[in-house]
Amino acid sequence: MVTGPHIIEVRDLTAAYGDFVLLEKISFSVRRGEVFVIIGGSGCGKSTLMKHLIGLLPPASGEILIDGCNVTAASGTERAGLIKKFGVMYQSGALFGSLTLEENVMLPMEEFTDLPADARQLVARMKLSLVGLERFAAHFPAEISGGMQKRAAIARAMALDPDVLFLDEPSAGLDPVTSAGLDELILSLNDNLGVTFVIVSHELASIYAVADRVIMLDSSKKGILAEGPPADLRDHDEDPFVHAFFHREAREMSA
Image 1: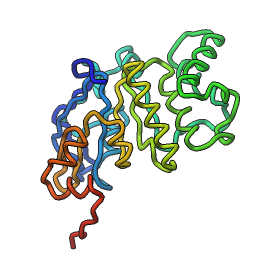
Image 2: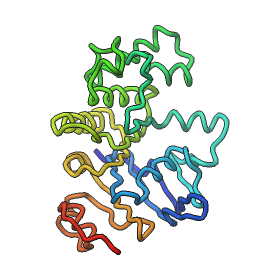
Image 3: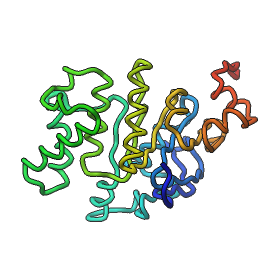
């Protein structure tokens, strides 16, 4: 559900680890209400790019803006305001095992709001309800399935009503049925709440199901190899690697 102007802008971003440059001067934007997916082969920089987008890694050069606020330069109250604009679901879910699902979802509110405990609890229950886990609020992460843990992690990422949700490999390790259910949840939240999604994924079925647009990163190019709706890239892009990726074709490894 793409509805508005750009909410994320990446301008001439270079990502490097010391002297090793992984991505060089890449630029792209994400529109408000878009489901935007970052794809590419192993080692191309997908997770590194995600870490830059959420401010965990500083760029070697370039800038990242979320809703007009510079992710790297923001500090103090501006930084606190920026953090509330997005939520993150990590690949493993990263739930605290010693806390119930309800307590996990309440954590961001305890850190960034002045809501009283009963209000935090009410909001946590509402967020768990949005992902279909209201009956499991008192359960611990070890007591639920991997797919349910990822849903709970999405509920926690939504605790502060963010404009953008970043999801790192949400379908990783899930069976096809559970993965399809997670795709439906993403589309429902996008459609009903207008949440913008930025997703790192390599699961073709999920990419086709949820993505409005993708960018494909390439390690040899150190940048963006292709950009557009996934079905268009599958059917019309003539680059051999893009074609192989979308058609699941094996390619010979370079010597």
